Image 1: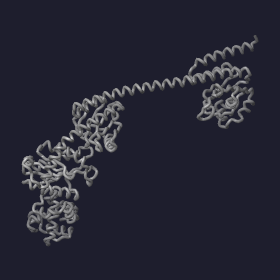
Image 2 (image 1 turned 60 degrees about the horizontal axis):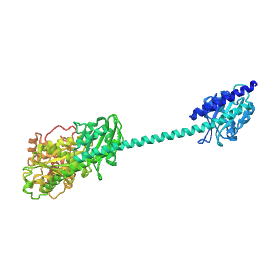
Image 3 (image 1 turned 90 degrees about the vertical axis):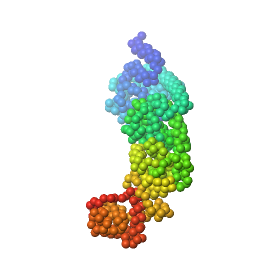
Length: 616
């Protein structure tokens, strides 16, 4: 046997070993690397090679693996029929290019961009000394092409090299297809396992949800209070739980908290939770926000078109999942039922109170049983509640009911005999307590309202004591009128004492609150700013003038100033009102307007120097 024959036999034996190794490799990428490495190993003249695979997305051949080339080779996309690889792919047969001219002729149709990339990948060479090409074919379908190059040596490929490459490519094509099938099967198994895992997870989740539902059903059946519900939810979700009413008052919490202010409890998280509460109320749906210690879930307590409150679930260092959200929904249903039960029980008392107030304020004859509820004298307080961001628009009835609960918590605790109710969107309070005690209680109410996140605006007018049940109606009417004056004239103070109109009440009996305010604004509209700048000396002097029988001298003596000062102030009043104190009708008009103003306690009883020089 000649040396050449022995060499070819050795190379054939090597090819058989390569075929066996290819069938043992299961990964497509491993097979591709093995093909190139073995091709260069069994073909002596080879020093570089590229394996191209057809890519359906870009409709061309792309370099999948290369030996002896720089990274620019992977940027090349070859069309069918273009260059060495493209012609082998298109012709579906192996080809040999024995010299550089043959290689250059084959690559004459190569795109200029691909030529530049090839030159960059070879370190400056445009064409190889010689080349072998062979398509990768399986059952008549071309998968790609192999290009074996001689870049740096003058060696030449021969026909036996081409046959070796063809045999290697044929075995590699089968191995590559089998590997792809195996890979697809493996991916399918992974997907099936993932689906099985998901099914098991959903089953476990459903089992947990059923256990949660049963736990909450037990709470509902046994009629446990809200704190038990909050504790149960906190245990199930491993998160802190707060149950709020519509006004953000804390009704229950777990762990138990000393404060009843949700903004204080949530502290740094409040800036994120407050808008979530507003969104939950508007959309009547759950809201999730990011807190400092973990996610926070806000679930509204919905009863028809109304939101009665909220459940705030705060995950402490853990996520809040679907099961937690489902548990929060279940707890929200139970909390809503409890809120409705409380409202139903309170509604009967509220209706009785409002019926009693209606009878009392409309002048009806009270029954003996009704009369025993209160002892004379009676103090009447009327509250005007407004939205936090406007003092013009009255609140909705449902909100008034919630604010009424706040007032009953504060006032009812001090005076259980007090009758508190809603009348025309105003809070009405009738009690046997002294006015000063009621004013202190109402100031606590104001403080409580200001502690609520929305900081509701409220003003209360407290009447003088009524000595008989028949006087209550007049005192109520004056308190309502005083509230209107206070609001329209923008007087200061949240709780004020109503100065009775006394005998002047007869004059205003047929006038509406709007008429009374209009009189005051029309007569004193220009006086009030000037009087404020003079620290009240203009109207204070006029009040003293009336109290001293319209005597300038007596008024000056009473106030301790010169008579000329009193005359100047009264003249200033006449200038501002275009009225004359010499005319009885004008003087009476001024007196009536001042009496109306004084209903809200807008009197000043001291003289000080005038910084702006309006009044001497």
